Length: 71
Image 1: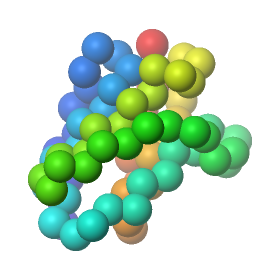
Image 2: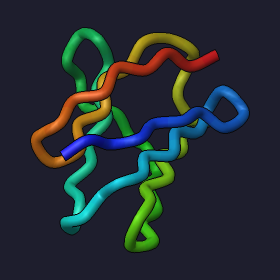
Image 3: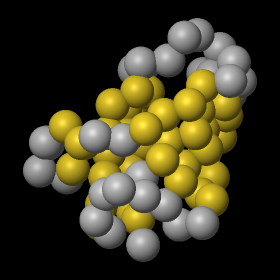
């Protein structure tokens, strides 16, 4: 399954194409689990990264991994 990933305002990530109930986790590049708000509307996940400092993060959605850089 392929996901579509897009950035909104440099701090939010919208992931589309989710068919199953998602399990979402955000990690720093050092592997530390981060606190991030996520909203799921049945088709899209909105991952809100505003509270995190700028940098590289890894978002795990079910069995997929997405690398992102916040500004």
